Amino acid sequence: MNNSKIWMLVLCGIIGLSACHKPRTKKTAQSLSDSAAVDSLLVISPDSARADSALFEEFRTKLDVEEIDFEYLVAKSKFSFKNRTQSIDNANVNIRVTKDSLIWFSVTGVGFEVARGIISPDSIAFMDKFHKEYYVYTYEQLSAQFKFNLTYDLLQSLIVGNLPVPRKPNQKIRREKDFLLLRQDDGRIMVDNYIGEKNRKLKRLQAVEQPTKNSLTLDYEDFTELNSYLFPFTSLITLDVQSEQDKQYYQTVIRIKHSKVELIKTNPGFPFSVPSSYEKK
Image (cartoon, rainbow, N blue to C red; front, side):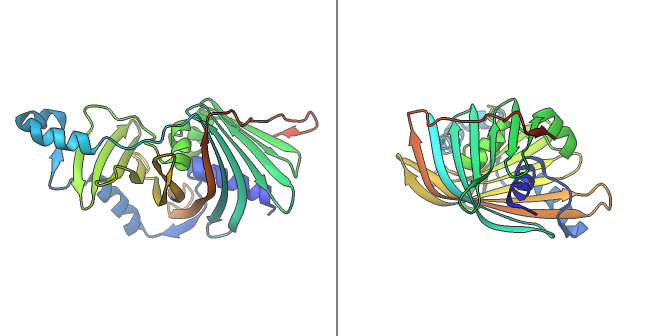
C-alpha cells in the first residue's frame, strides 16, 4: 500500500475508530465498560459541594485546566501507525492550525508531497496526489459510518492537548491517584479527562461510545515549555473497536510526535485547491 493510502487510513483511524484492527479479548472489552462506570472514593459535584464551599473551591481552582491559547500553530511532525495488517513508522507531516477554525496537513514521501488535507468544523477534505483522487466528508457521514460521534474539537485536541469538550458547571470531579478526573457526558460519548494535579495539564483522555463501548484513549507525553505553556510534543492514540462481523474488539495504535512547534500570530497560509483532473471518491 502506498504512503498516501496509508495516510488516509491513519486519518480515518484517528477520526473514526474503524473496525478492522488487532483483536483483543472480550474480558478486555468488559474492563473498558467497567472502568468507565466505577466511581472512586471522592466525588464532588456543585450540589454536594455547597455543604463545604472551601473544599469545592480547592477543587474548582485545581481544575482550571491550563489550556494552550494561540492564533496560529505550525508544526513539523512524525506519524506512526500500527494495526494487525499494516505498519508505518515516522511518516513526515507538516501541520498548520487556526485555532477553533482550520487544520491543514501535508504528507511528504521521498522528496515530494503525496497527500494534502484540510479539516474545518463542518467537513474534512483530502487529496491523494499520487492517485489524483480526492475525498470530502461531513462529520455526520463519518459519525454514521464509524458509529462514533466525531467533532473538530476532538481532532484539534489531538494536536494541542486542550479539552475537546467544554467544561460545564454540573460535571463531576474526583481525585484518582495523582490526577483530578473530570467526567463529561457528551450525548452518546462518555469522556474522562485525567488532569495533572500539579501542572493542571490534560494528561489522558478516554472517550467511550456508550451503545457499543468503542473507545479512544489519548495519552499526552513529552511536555515542553512553549510560549509560557506546557505543550505535549507526543500524543499516543489507542483505538479499540468492536467489529460488526465477528464481534471481536480490534486495536489500532497511532503516535503523533512533533519535532518542532511554533505558536504564531501571522497567517501561515492554508493552500488547498483540487485540480480539475482529480476524481472525487
